[in-house]
Structures are given as C-alpha cells and as structure tokens.
Image (tube, rainbow, N blue to C red; front, side, top):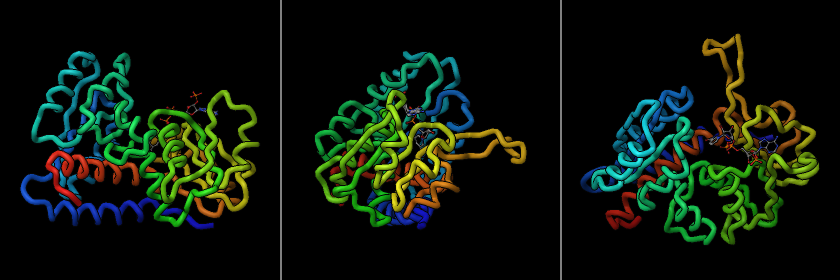
Length: 293
Ligand code: NAP
C-alpha cells in the first residue's frame, strides 16, 4: 500500500506558485477571503488559506462579518469586491450561517473572480471542457493528486460517493472529461443509491465525499484500488485537547489493507484544496492582467 501524501504534493505545488508569483511584475495577486460568523471549522480553514497566501507572496485580504449579516448586506459586499480593481479572487467560506442563501452568493461573485469555481458559468465550463474558467478547488485538487501520484483514469471505473456541488458532481465531471489523465467511466452514488458496497467493490478508483465518518470500510474496497478520502469529520474524542479528532469518510485501517494507494485524513485532499485555491488566484490575476504563463 502506498500513501498518497497530500502535504508533500501540495508543498511542491506551493513552491511552484511561489516562484511564479515572485516573477510577476508590479502588484501581487490579491485574494479576498470572506467569512461570516465564527463556525470553528471555517475559522481554521480561512486562517490556513491566509497563511498559505502569505507564504506564496499573494495578498490575502480577510473580511469578517458577524452572524446576522443579511443577504442584502453580503451581496453588497460581494458587489464591492467584484468592482474592486485591487482584488483578483473572491472566496466566500462555506457553509454560510442560516438563513443566508449560499447558492445566490456563489452566483453573485463575478465569474472572473470566482476562484472557488462555484459560479454557474464556471461549473458549465467544466461540463463543456473549456479550460478558460475556474475548476472548484477540492475536485481540482483531487485530479492533481491523482496525476501527481501517477494514476491515469483512462478506462478505469471511478466511483464517486456524494453528489454535492462542491465535490461530488464536479469531480465526476472532471474524471469523465475527454482529456489526458481523465477518460474514466464514472458512477455517482448518493443517499438514495441501493447497495453501495456492491458498487464501491467495482471501483478501480473510489472517491468518498459524503461527510460520514469512516463510512467506507475495507470490505467495500476492491483489492488494488486507489482510494481518495475527501471527508473531514470532527468526531468527539475525550483524549484530545480539542475534544475531537478528525476522521475521513473512509475507515483507514481496514481500507488501507486492500487499497493499492490511499489518501490519509488529515494530510490528503485538504492541503490540495488550499493549494488549488492559490493556483486559481494566480490564474485570475493573469487573466485580468493578460499575462501569459
Ligand atoms: P454534502 O454537501 O453534505 O454532500 C454529501 C453527499 O453525500 C450528498 O450528495 C449526499 O446524498 C451523500 N450522502 C450522504 N450520506 C450518504 C450515505 N449514507 N450514502 C450515500 N451517500 C450519502 O457534503 P460535501 O460538501 O460534498 O462534503 C463531503 C465531505 O467532504 C465532508 O466531510 C466535508 O467536510 C468534506 N470536504 C472536504 C474538503 C477538503 O478540502 N478535503 C472540501 C469540501 C468538503 P444526497 O445528495 O442524496 O443528500
């Protein structure tokens, strides 16, 4: 069994981006990071994104708004950031507190600054295999992890657990694309899928993104498969200082006995998501300033 080390792969991507950014003339690319409320996971994600932006030499502009911010106030903020010449990319940390309409906010971000890739236009470009848009960061990170681990999806059966807009659907579309590294045969499972184990056992590549701790057990994995665990779940653990531990959607001890390659949690897909956000920000800057690469 080989561990797919997201930390190491993300570190090389970050080093490449750092070199690229240092060679850019003039103002550095700027990423606006919008967080509404104090959800602990969101606080830590935004902090990590800010730190990575700083490491690469990007400008991270943190914008915090309290719980109770109205839809109209948030839309106004997005409009201001869309119009701000000094901002290249906008990220609105998900999930937004209720009752804010997250999809409406994602659509409000200008497609040219939508480095999270959730705007209708950018999702449509993934379906149309048009590289001029932004691919959402977690699915893009998964594809990069696979490519850099020498996994070619061509002719393989890729089974995706989860059909969210953020992970399941876009990663399924990417795996299906008629492009080098992709060309997979894709099955998508969700909460109404019957006998999931029967499908996962047919997967050459299994991508789990359902948000259910350790859902995928070893007996659900085909011997020799590649397993990508997207899940990040906080499970109560009294032995930890924080009171919780992080676990994926895959039961690592049993799945790693059957898999040929597998990602850990933490240290698998998570770091790649952050790295791809930075890559998208540099791309947004280049598209806006028409500097080729
Ligand atoms: P989500 O929006 O809650 O979607 C979960 C999906 O899983 C839905 O499509 C749901 O089906 C399906 N599902 C739920 N329970 C199921 C079950 N028992 N059997 C089969 N399908 C089931 O979640 P998400 O945003 O995609 O996130 C999924 C996980 O990935 C979470 O743990 C999240 O924290 C993690 N995540 C990690 C990263 C990263 O950077 N590593 C980024 C984003 C998300 P229905 O559609 O039928 O409801």
